[in-house]
Length: 146
Image (tube, rainbow, N blue to C red; front, side):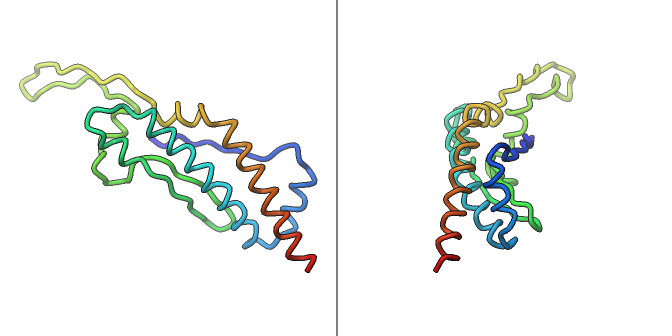
């Protein structure tokens, strides 16, 4: 079910160069702040896009920010092993199913609510990341000037 999306900052070359000059811990801190805000927005939109039958799926959509080395990434979706264990089936659909007796139950059509949520917020995510990176760099520059 993971919808992998890679965003790279292009354009603002001066901003990128300044960002690369920072210590790795400061870069991760600035990136975490921006990714947290962006992931929160995508999670909120995914809750709106999620199909509602019992509201379990909608309630189970959360966001997390993880760090692996110098790589910072956000995860949005239902909690693994949580009450909405069926989220992948809803998102990806299912193959034709049948009971043990052979009676066909049909298939479930895909409802890619997470992909729709990201597609709807893609430009906002990009602007949040740029804005937070610029704000973090300004803050670090003020600290360095003291």
